[in-house]
Image (cartoon, rainbow, N blue to C red):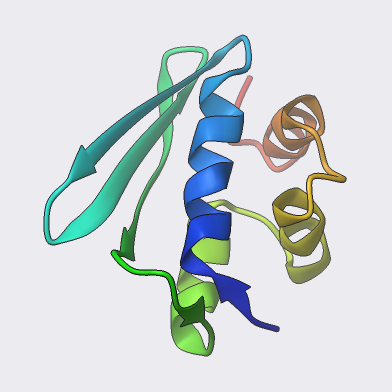
Length: 97
């Protein structure tokens, strides 16, 4: 499974535009993101700059930082999993109350 860097950056903006989510981005050597849900930090992740593909272990680490399984992460990137569905998954897994 391969994703482009910009697909992951789009996820940051997708979450940031939804009620209950807040995204803090910092540009530097890499794009760093802190994502909060209902005031609680739920993930900290980074992606390199560029337009290339992400694959191998890096996408595995990013997927785990989003606290999603492979199928859910693929759906999230393809925008078939909404931010509300993501929030429900986080609640089910015990990361949110």
